[in-house]
Length: 222
Figure 1 (cartoon, rainbow, N blue to C red):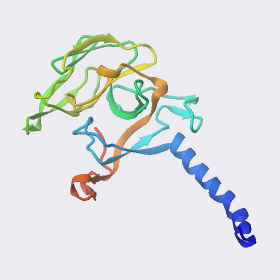
Figure 2: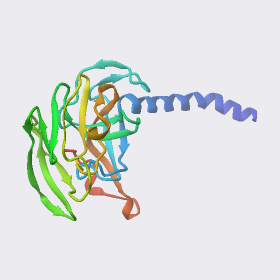
Figure 3: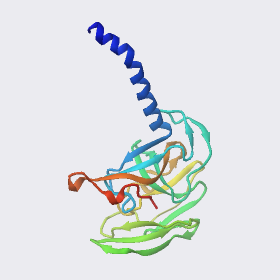
Figure 4: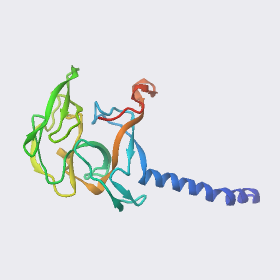
């Protein structure tokens, strides 16, 4: 190593390390983006979407840890959350359906919360390629979101009833018949949740040379 290179490293290496630390800490504790590789949240989120993750939605954590410094909110029914699977630690994106203390069940894809059924109506897309698109309003929730079911796929359309333990949440994918969710890996502990997503930052179409899907840029998630 030449003296000139050593001087350059002394002058600039610390600055580079500080910048890297600040950026990674910001992504760990403040805000991040998440690449969605699967279709378990179709039609709300499609493969190739990069979604914004607000890591301050529920509290403030020490960067690079799950230690909570401050807590000011809890996930609500209908929230799209990012979390680590309690089964294998894989980062996932699903919708909150059941809150702590509630009883959740499904009968032929119709969700019941404490015995009250969700409201389902056929969406404008109707039936397409063997898939049925619908709008769902969960019991006790004001907002409506889209779902899709695929009758030809084998899956758990009837489930429960189960009671959500304190500090845990029951989550489902909007692609109801093609989603690994709480029906399979159980309840999600609050400590596994990293943030809430509210919009698509941008989207790349792997089937079209990874060209941008401009119509999905900054699209809000229902």
